[in-house]
Image (cartoon, rainbow, N blue to C red; front, side):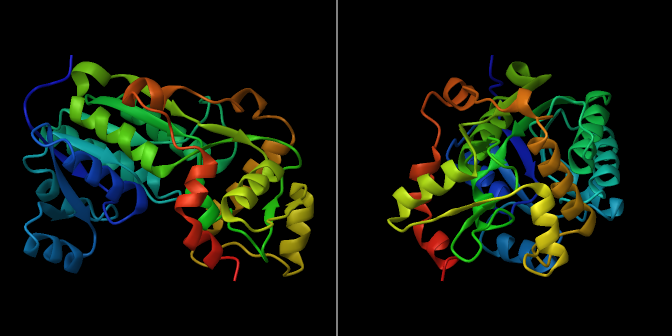
Length: 304
């Protein structure tokens, strides 16, 4: 049964796309959970407080900020940056959460089987196992590829959908659906969700199929450039393609390893969709076509 007492929920990454959506979703369920926004930037926290919002400063690279941020917190949403630092950040935060008396932690991980060999997924699996071995009640949310990656790492290049995994399909899920699931799990609490793993995958599509969906939604032809991982590596080596400038080098290398493993079929058993959004939220998930239509301006801006 859902817990009935109002809980204070520390939301890490509250300035990010998923974290801010989690805050919004929690605020839409008044009386169940009070979101406490967290940021490492003091000016951001000060502005939130001026606006009458509950907020604290926390720096995942400075455990000295943890006790103050966790004071009076019942539940935590843990999301980390895409670097190997997530390992020590999560470990020290979980330890501090135990010491602070936090009752429940929800972690945003990856869609994996626990036996990953690419570094980024392995980092997440190490974090998940540490959390599971802690004294905290916990739940893990495992999203497949974010649709929002089409605005970032899987961005359209020169008006094309570049896909370095041949005809292999992967799962896609919208960040708003991820946030809605996270918020529901946090609001209902450990009585309902402790020890649960929630896998989120709405659409199963390859690059050509994504390009077709974007073409329909945007009313503009979006061709697919279907490559192999070796093709993409040669393009990068020749300066014909790049990774985002702000991406951690180890994470960037890991994405290429992941692409190769997908291309070689090592992720075929994870090429599935799930009914988690429908089961938990009682509504249909956001599919790629409607998502693209809703983000039409952002997508077209990346084509110009």
